[in-house]
Amino acid sequence: MNKNSQVLVFLSSQPLYQRNYDRFGIDILKKNGWRVYYFECSFIFRREFFNSYGGEKENIKFKNLIFPKNFIELYDKLESLKPKYCIDLLGNSKNERVFKFNIKKTTKIVNLDLGLYPLFNHSIYIRLMKKFEELGLKLFIKFLFDQLVYKIFKKYNNFKYDINIVSGNKGFLNDKTLYQIKAHSFDYDQILRHKKLNQDSINKENKKIVFLDQGGSSKKGDDPLFRGVKLKIDYEKYYEYSNRLLNYYKNRYSAEVVVCTHPKSNLLYTKKKFNFKVIQSKTLENIYDSDIVISYSSTAIQYAVIFNKPIVFFNYFGNFSKIEKKFYFDETKAFVNVLGSQHIILDFDSDKPPNLIFEANDNLYKNYIKNYIKNLESPDKMLWQIISDHLKKY
Image: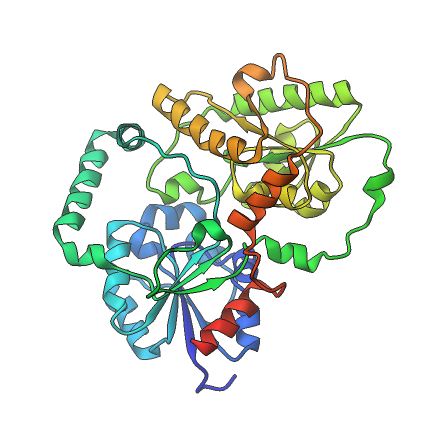
């Protein structure tokens, strides 16, 4: 690669697994003439998360993968590379926000708003009480103090991205000073790669139910820990209720049941917990071949929406507090309302599951695609080809 090529840096607080390497289009960017670097900064910003997923040894080998150990090293390395663009994959902690504000003086910062999903407007009381129950008194006071400090130093409140990349209408901001790129979600790339799916499902005799497992009990570096909290969830009941529900539907509809587990979960562990076939790849193909999808509230349902498959959303409450139950119920209800889907609570409905509705609302699904998955004005190119084309012109 030409050493005079423009430099592009991913600033991240998450590991560079092979899945992330592919999702972030590093090979596509390199082929388009970019000198690409990946800064894995969680050792600085989210030390406990860094340790929980296994640290440096868990990342793939990539010669431009950098693990800064302190702020001096982080700033010095950026100064030496002088990137034209920094892609923001950091979190939203106080330190991360201040860091982004400071480097904006010397580089253009790109926001990826590509994981869009329906949001519920929680009250301030509910949000604060949930945070309190997750953190405990000591850490909650620290959280409030950090927020207060951030508000006092008003200059940090004026941070603004240079470029916003959106996957749907809901991410487009009404800001004429902001350069915005209309694109699609990460998962839509998989649709482009699988334009010719086999059509066997049209003639199959039995119904097929796909269950999207959140994999929460076996994920390395799970999402709550990334946010600095530890959720003490009783996952044993989750598997018990899920198996009971799926077994009922298997018998009720003479259906094939396939569990598609989360990419970060431990596959061997998950196979032991479910009484059904468990896979960790070919989720797209299985959803395409399905008659109905049972899922938690996640962007994981995108394939089901694109293929017009009816969705049943579920919550699992376990040993959540009343506040947490309300919060997560309302989060899921936002998906349910936007898609007109069924909604069940594993803790209660696994004993007497409702009949499944094997129909999707075409109009609601079409609106979901344009609002959250793919902007109708974006070309059918790979995501990072679209981004690269725009960044070169900007």
